[in-house]
Image: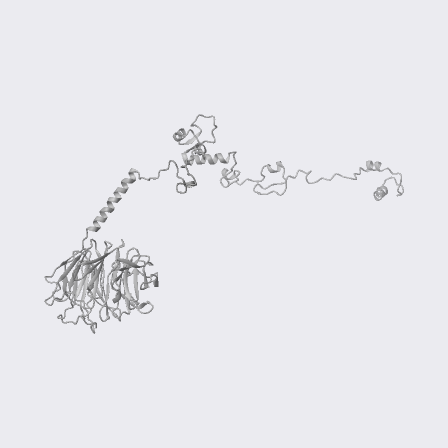
Length: 560
């Protein structure tokens, strides 16, 4: 203060000396110079500076005043926004305000509307006349007096079902305890009149089916005068007077191409499905047809029809001789596999598991002639024992109907093909496949034949090719040997080999017979054999150039 006083004193107009007077009054100085020792300082809040709050902000880090929160937005408006866009929003669709409505009441009305079809209109007061404040089905609301689900439901315990007397615990036999039944419990369940009518219809249909199945009677007709010759030998005996040694196991040295038609067997009224030659000799021919008949024909001599076997009521799909030809199996669409005596025509056995058999094969081993394998439409391969008439093994790995079963590797293994476009190799009597062959480029294989030297498997593929697989070692496809040129898509045309293995033969959908050279895979010959599909073909085992074909025109033809 002394410095201040000195400064003021030196600037005074009195012209007096600059000495400091001790008797100067401070209050007078204040009045004289209007000196304020504690001036009032303006702070930020005293100036009218309002804090701006962003209308889109989610958080505020200070305590704003009411005026700050609700002051109008400042700045130019977006001229391109519609009224709806410019309106205040707290959700994507608009501004939502919570109304005071009890959660229980809301859920109660929602459930009532879902159950009964009506609910109370919350926008209308309760004082209105009944019906004006209800939305939905008014008739049901009148019946229930406008009660909600909560009000109309039974109260727990009030109408609880009563149980029978539980009995005395000391009486062990009659004591029911907590397991006692209800008083009003109906222990006999009877179908209603409508259900009973449906059941009666179903019973009548099933009984008719059973009667129809039982109608089929197995019989056979002999078409020749004498079943035996002058020496008492039956027609199964291998003839010795045909100019060919039919009992030899050696194939002819060289085979030639057939060129002309020698004979036509007629007798089937519908298409022929398959033909099989008598084992070893081939002096008899067995054919099955879509007319549900199986016929046995002479191949040499007068070439007569020897016997007709009748026992199926639907088309016969496959046939198979046993090793000595005395018996054969037939598989038909009536879901039955039947065992026939070739000579007498007697049906020795019937086998079925209510599934359609697509192929049937005897086990070629001499000690297993009582077993046969069948590929079924339900994706399974089943082994039956003829003696016990029971299934002894089931191979269930395919994903489609099984088309063929072929034994390889001295009958220790067999190959199966299916509509699932795969080949599976099985060890005999082991129901797990040892090899699975499938490829995205593969097609379904409906016919398979083993070559005469047992080394190769010829597979008729649905993409109009015959594929060759090695049957001895690893079942690999031989990509150098693919036979093409015929058209078989959609038909299970049988493939076969010439006895010397130099030619591959197959029918096709146009009724032609194709003959390929084994070494070069070239088409050596093709000719029109049938008017419709040529479904089967086989080369006589002791002849150099004789081929038998069958077709859907019901004819069986012999070519030389």
